[in-house]
Image (cartoon, rainbow, N blue to C red; front, side):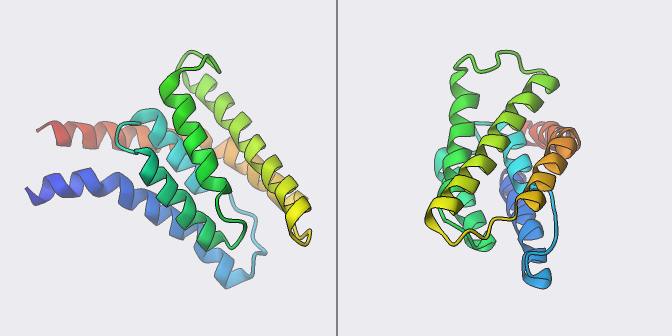
Amino acid sequence: MISRILIKLFPFVFVIFFIYLEAAPIYFFDNELVKPLMTFTIIYSWIQHDSDRFRPLWLLFFGLFYDFLKDGIVGITPFFFLVMYHLSNNNVGFIAANYLNNIWIKFSIILIFYFMSLFLINFLLEDFSYVIYKNFISVILSIILFPLFYSLVQKLSVMFGRLNDR
């Protein structure tokens, strides 16, 4: 009984762990590090593998939590998480097949739109403190590391899916 609860909670704990892992260097190094967007990648991978587990309310919670820890404009990340969920569930013809290279291209496009919107909102609403080269490197790192995180989530999803069926 307890093991079934832990198995069902694992993806949520996994995402929260990556949110903390991504946010921790900000407090220790005063935003000087260039790091990939692991949380964005992990949530996108989980949505692709098991979209029934992550309902829109959970994605809203994860996005708000991520934005609060990132210390920026709150609400942009949950919007993009919900857009990713909608595109994944409704098959709007964005890219039809679910092969890794198609999922990778779709992820890259969404991530680029995410950073363009952050750039524009930061330019229009805040004192322009957006460092373009760091964020560009971060986007490139995230796109390059996407297959690694995607395969990790795929293996975990299959493993915990089998345990959940027992």
